[in-house]
Length: 385
Image 1 (tube, helix red, strand yellow):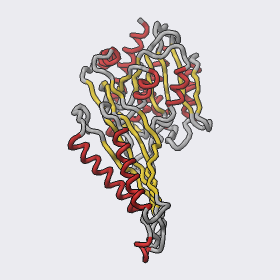
Image 2 (spheres, one colour; image 1 turned 90 degrees about the vertical axis):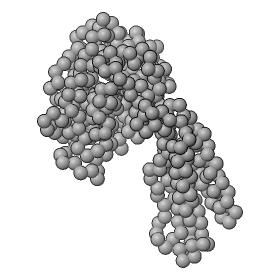
Image 3 (cartoon, rainbow, N blue to C red; image 1 turned 45 degrees about the vertical axis):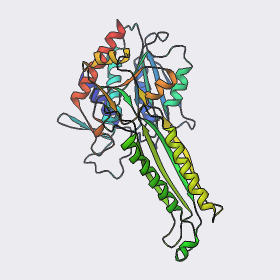
Image 4 (cartoon, rainbow, N blue to C red; image 1 turned 90 degrees about the horizontal axis):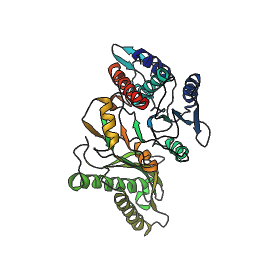
């Protein structure tokens, strides 16, 4: 397939502002129509509200296990970022293509669509599955409905390639993620009589201190895997909201935290310790303020991915890329869910560098798209054998 055709398709995909908080239906309709013009029928799996959707299509014999290529259609917001160009109009400067989603991960989807277009008349002995999902950026949410749809099929893919940006290196593992919310309730009063109240922000900062101590303990004594850039499980507080005015002792405070765990780590014991600390704080506070509470709720989680280096899926993809070195990544993907829910051997491999994702002036290099095109062309050749 020609690189220019891939770039042209990417240009069209970037023009859809599919930020996770908004609908992706226009992009999904574009892809469905693109495939329909080639005579390929696609299944559309909507969310409950009908405002977002996954797309799933199979090229070739559907009753034989084949290879699935997976990508998410949503992107992260651009507000507050200093872009030098319109993030939703692709700009080319030399060998770099700029725009929100060029690397993460519409570049991969463009390569897949170009592949399908060029090979639509080709007879495949094993199928190629296309899986494009919504709301990956906010916790791999949309793909769960897609997986439910696939689970009803008599045949599932024998291999999955998630096309997240890995600079075309074959990635065999990523961390899992558990996202939680800690809600603290105190007793409000006038700040001039602060000791008569219970400051919910103080309860929250006590919890933050506990989370930081857990991180220090993990770093010093926890499991390490030096194949990861961050070789241990991480605990992180991302947001905190509390209080209404400086002269009011705040009644409420909420903080959001996450645990990104190594595949060899179970996050549940850490979560148990966080809950135990919350219970101790609340019990002490209730001695004076019966309404005091510190609760811990899970808001989202997805599993890690840990594919064995000698798995046939790994051998297949390294042969397709021509790059033998394997990697592990700290960020998550839908791959862990495909493996956990459907038992599909999964690797992560796609064009672009994750360090360019989520930043202003996100870009993908054209040689990365060319390398992805080469990998996919080799893949379709294998499926036709």
